[in-house]
Image (tube, rainbow, N blue to C red):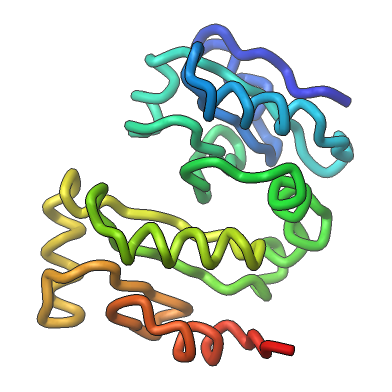
Length: 188
């Protein structure tokens, strides 16, 4: 089953009492258009979840999304998680597989939050590292969210980014060995 095109906020009703994914993309952006093509190529099980895509700015604002492409994970129209940036077809398949969905339902998936800023090189390195390992995460841009910046500072005593929370364990900076330890990644 292919994703449904969502043109207006009323179309979000397809997510009523259901779980699913919604791609927010920007028209005429090569990165967004490539992501949309990958998103459409995914074969998904409609019995478990539904998918849609939109370039409607009002829908992005409804979910407080300020960049595209971004995939929203929704349950009953409520935002559960999001995946910012470009994902390859293989990475999307991992996000969409029933094992990932089941892990979210069973609580086995690690809860990963990355506090970032748009100009931070190490933030991009952490995000790319996790994407390459097909590990979903939630990103919070502290340059746009002062409350989150204050919470981050209260937790660590630092304003520096990236700061990564993995199931409540804090990692400041791109510390690959610590990330691997907390995520259970063993290099071959």
